[in-house]
Image (cartoon, rainbow, N blue to C red):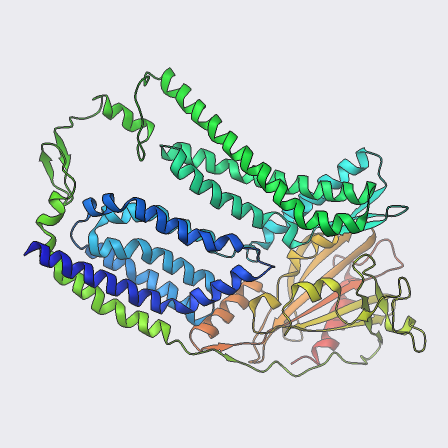
Length: 576
């Protein structure tokens, strides 16, 4: 009878898992595109679920012996995980979907087989978090890694007597070996950091017998990956300075990452040896000589092996009762397994339709973008267009009025000109639309940029994440309203430019106005999840500067603030 009940529960569990995989089918398809996206650089993500399944396979005997009766707490833990996953599926928030999936990989075994099985599933489930695309999400970390790599390269090259200049994340050299190397987001080292962390987590799981030693080795992966990327950027700059810029940015740039990664792996193995020796030394110094720690134990459990903590004649069984005698895995599990078979059936009956509903989420409706153009004329202002050189080594911006009749190429290098900068073309999705114009009011220059987002959420990002990469220091943020429209302003200062002010605001086709990036994300997620629509947000930025004045533009000066508010009021008249 017990065997029949156990078989029924296994069938219910496998059926529920099948429905779960069906419900997350859209997530798997989106992850396939993420792993193939060169901007995310997550090709290692394919191996992560393979390793998780391998861990479960090698633990199959422990899983079978630890199986207990179904748990109400496990079922309740499934509900918030499903809620998060549904919000992610409907809102096209891949990271929320993955968070819900990982939670279900723990709570679902808990619901069917008890907490001991859930504990064994915890590591392989959490390991799946290495498939979460965080490179574009952790931009605030990316910019600091880029500045660290470029700053180190600049300092070392200057120390060797190479005449170079640093402008944000770019290293620029003139002369016989001229080059312009910008440490872009893919070269920040964040992606190699995730890959090395995933590899170190797997390596430490099977080579270190205790959780403390695993965590210590895992922590070593972070400085190793950062150091490896800094060395890579430095060697690229050295190749460009003392050799050929084409070779440095071509062959060496493409293949140097593999060499650095191999060195990082070697250092990881060496760190594992150091951690092991340090742990052995600590054990010997604390009287644990001769005690062999098995997998899953920690140093504290060694005292229990020596009989220093509790009497091993008593233990807690799988049902939470104190019993006497040696622990025999699996005996308590089958004893009451049939008492809650109804709970396993209820869990399957309740969760399966939810997963089907998740799989049937309709395709979100893409709204039409707001119809507007930056005005050709604003009262009291002169206006001009901006063009950008498509040559990566030049990357100049040119005013349209300074182009000669019939001239369509860059006056500096002769390359083709575009309305989008090279960085915008490479990073932003293809359906992103950008409009730029320059306005002059008296001595003040206002560079206005309107970015109309596409279907992807990566079309828009906060200026705080890209301006430091261009060599600017941001300070004194403030918010204010002009003509009923909210703006957020930040002071900018750079080594090669006079102080200026950047003000920005967001709005969408539904008439929502905000100057908060967080509020915009929350509204967008709500509309995607609840209303099943993709809003078309627009970010308008205004850079106010006085090019011929070293004192620059400052909102602390009343005259400058009034002039900015006057221009924003006139600009707001033509914005939706």
